[in-house]
Image 1 (cartoon, rainbow, N blue to C red):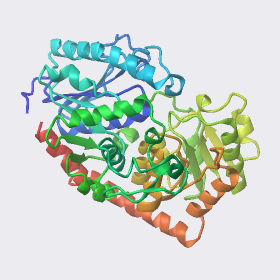
Image 2 (tube, one colour):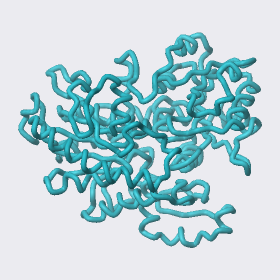
Image 3 (cartoon, helix red, strand yellow):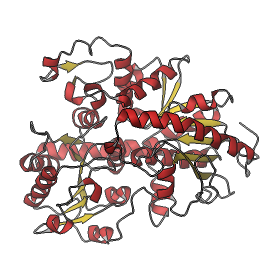
Image 4 (tube, one colour):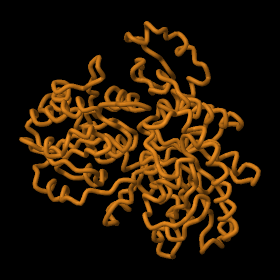
Length: 477
């Protein structure tokens, strides 16, 4: 381990991610765990637009360290500091990924990112805070080229399940099951068999495989980079017990399970979350306190999903017809303008908020079901809290997550969309009844959710498998 001269700390780990809440969350949670465990300084580099939203008063330019953007030390001796710094992705005023062509986004990211990230690494060294290791998430594999000539080791941080990593790995390796899927079979129940995974229908695969774009090419770059090394290490946001079969079958790489990376300790120690979205100031936690145990349906579709007016209306009607109280996170940028909060609340038993602390909500005893898009952060948080799910996957890896949660882990049910891509009122109510009802399947789902919660928490305990893996990784740097 490096000499401890950076403010009394050892390593200085730089984590690079894009301007997406779904990537910033797991990167930030890992940063805090690394800072605490490694007695290290960890800098989280995000694009300038997201840095300004996280720290509205920041004056730092892309490529500059930001001394005003530091969290309090996590260790009693003053060590374990998580800092933030910006680089440029070419969209300094911010964008929504839905509003820009994937090819254009990647082109500008690769054009502006390396130059400003290199400047950041240089400026940190000038300030006597040289980077000793770089971790990067999806879409920023180019970060390895930035620091390669400096001799700084890099490790990929895979923020989706190991199962999805394995699917991409076999896909880019040209596994025979993929080319055999003809256009006709894609529309049927054609099944794909991969080592360590359950049978997968075409609709269970990541959307980038069925509808390729420049983001698929960016995923391929991950595996091209990993192929340069003999048995490369990959940090994976999962825990071994959850995905043992696929991890054991993926022998060509060292998948290091360090999750679920959900930092409840920090969440409960702070008054508000530091997210890209402003947390609703309404009394939603007090509202939950007034509800019966396991009675509330919590509805949230993450930071990227945008729902059509028709889908919002079907959800609204289904929730009201269920007769159950519900807490619905409905961002203004995720719904058509004509659908306002008062229209949603009319005649319902629910509460609608713009944004909330999802970890706190899922941990609340009143919550009995999570209606979700099935993104991996949301799925992981549900697992850690033992909350069963009704899943409405939208894109990326969400359909795969839903398949695993229903068929392998038994902790939820996928709500099936019609030919028009809409999950209607009847289907939503079916899902809620399956998860929250009194039938045998509902009881089994709730039982499984509790069992996986205990296994997840055991993995995250001081002597748990994920904690041991992270400590071993740090000691090996």
